[in-house]
Amino acid sequence: MNSSIIYTITAALLYIMIAKYDIHMFQLSSYRYNRYFRWLVPGNIISPKRGFALAALIASFFSGYYGPGILAIITVFTFISSLREKFKTPLVFTMRVKRLFATNIILFILSATMALLFADRWATLLVGLLLLFSNFIMLLANLINTPVEKAVNRYYYNDAKKILASHKNLIIIGVTGSFGKTSTKNYLTSILAEKYNVLVTPGNFNTLLGVVRTVREHLRPYHQVFIVEMGAKQRGDIKEICDLVHPSIGIVTSVGEMHLETFKCVENIQKTKFELIDSLPSQGLGIVNIDSPLIKSYNHNSRCRITTYAVEQPADYRAQNVIYGANGLSFTLSTNGEQIESRLLGSGNLLNMLAAIAVANHLGVPTNKQKSAIARLQPVEHRLSMRRSGNVTVLDDAYNSNPTGAKMALEVLRNFAVNEGNKRIVITPGFVEMGTRQYDANKELGQMIAQSCDYAIVVNTTNREPIARGIAEGGLSQEKLFLADNLIQAHAHLATILHPGDVVLYENDLPDNFK
Image 1 (spheres, rainbow, N blue to C red):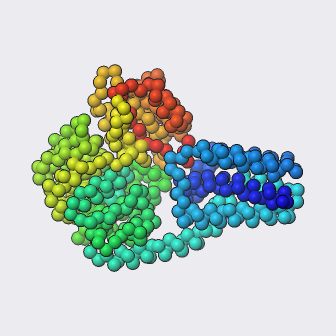
Image 2: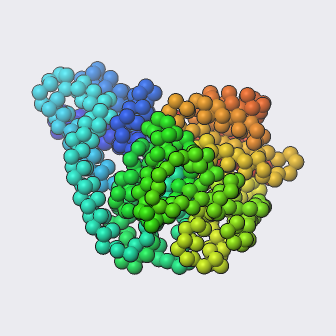
Image 3: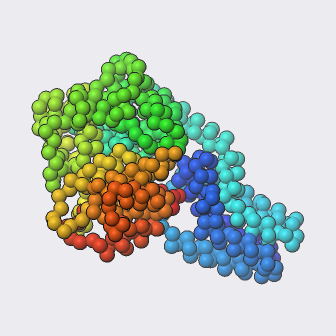
């Protein structure tokens, strides 16, 4: 077989492995160019995969006749490296990803073939450059695919709109907030299921396209209630979803400092979350958490009736006489004096239950059935859930942390009863996507950690310096702080200090595109 053909095939195999990594990081960046370039420059231009591509480039320049063989060796090493890679969030092979992959590979093969046919002795060098700059070919492929993606999305959107229009009596409930929306959605689903046939957006299907997919794939004529979780990373995101589903009930669980990279300021976050309340009809119901200062202070002009809930503030629905115990919590509901018990922990989960109770009362779910459902509620995974690992208690709050949620989790850790000699330990990489507030927010996190625990393990390098500074300023000695490059190293160190009876809090877990 001609050496050029062998070289092209081998280069294409190497390119596929590198392209998979490029597309994975692009997916983790929500397919947004600005977020991808922030990840790419400067620290990730020469990533492990790009290192193999650079080796291929150097080899192609100096190899001459031996180019195909050297490239084959590099390809084998890349393949072995790929087998060893572990990602917390694996690449999801959606139809968009498959189309992007196909266009990406076609672009490479065409470019490599043209180089080998017409570039003579410079051909292998040009192929090496294609490997090295694969991420830019991937972005070009995405640009080429953009009209197709828009057409596909438009078709799906219109189809979902027709399906919703055919469900005349469907009660649609929107749930949004900087944090607490997934837990509230799940608790509300469990309580309303005592009376209604409920459909809920699954997992993290909280974007417009996630809601469209839920409607098209899961909504059936027998559903009576549709609970829609609504996420946002910029102004207008909530309104887009509301324009599709037209909710009659809306819950705003919180407003806080999240996604400041795209929102720029908390005022924009306020306005975006209240896009849900603003979309409700005059006969609708808005339910808001006034323990959140940015909700209480927001001057909205809603047409609908507003119901408030809180733990600390006077509200329409308030939890009183709250008691936290080893088996969960209990409280008295202000509206009817009912004593309610739950296995859940923390004031955040208590607030989420209050929101669900307010909706359940509005929709006529009997009180005894509400209490029964609440007693059975389980914590949402990675959202301050508790489990036992041997004789150690693990508090898992590893999902998408933020300053307010972290404060609540650290309060639970601080108040957790331990025996003399046992430790309260926190493992955290801090917060990301905080824009100009990132340094200060992580420094404040360090100060809270110093006041709440006996030992801290800071994971990854992204926020290491501000968290460590905050811990020092908060008074926790440096002997009680360990800086880990990754979670594997953190766990290895944890094993050396852990004793039966200790409590470990996992606070946040950075996506794979943060180091």
